[in-house]
Length: 381
Image (cartoon, rainbow, N blue to C red):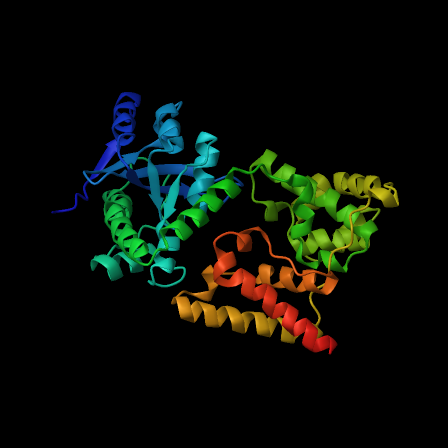
């Protein structure tokens, strides 16, 4: 059966409503987005693509005042939304619709569990599974221009034309290997994480050098990070345009009390100094009035070299399990999860983070706990 690849433009509420009603009778639809973000904090949706096995529909978000039918479709629990490497797409929908689609099936995740490779691009996956070449020449196009070029329209349509076929082939492999539940759980975790409210107060914990600061400096870092996050959103500009992490850290470390001191911080944007310098000084001064009971707790420093053997043993165990299950080790555990296990063992009873208590517990979780206990016992012998 020939797969339809011709783009079908959708820019009226009547057409969109009719299509969404039809799509809500299907078990699955293919979904993709094209967006722009070079000068903004939030992604600007330029196109929503949906493939239903009968056509490739290109929804023009710029043509609509409201997209209720699309929102209802994206939230319909009876319709699986099939996407590839979907984290940015989920953010686009959350910005455009105020809703994160679900349930989803991410074919990049599915491909990793089906033995196709870790972090595989869609073009490579379609080529491997279907023998189809999907051009990527329009990736960096201006998706907000109107009209879109013929090349853009064809490119956008091809991004969803074969996606349901890829999905079907992955489902077959995953069911055969009894791994479909694993993929569904990981995809559900993605949706749940995307639906969580943003913790603006906690953004300071993401600053890489924050562990070097004492609690008083962390109080300053917390206040500055909160300001940067809220202002970037309010002004709809990239957060790094206000300042990057090294400058946040230096402000918190040096705690300047005048503009000249801020000017001497390497890399501080001149515009931020001119427009927001006094505000930054006020934020720092106010943070310094906090009492010790209001200060954040000091960060854990990076693990010392003395725990290198612990990490090596854990990674060796995961590598053996990954080989036994014919899986990339990256889908089983993240670097931060290794470190969390070691830190918990240093402090007392080793613990596993949330993900490792799900289906991963039987695959690697129990073994990780046993491994770190054995290593600790050997060190203390």
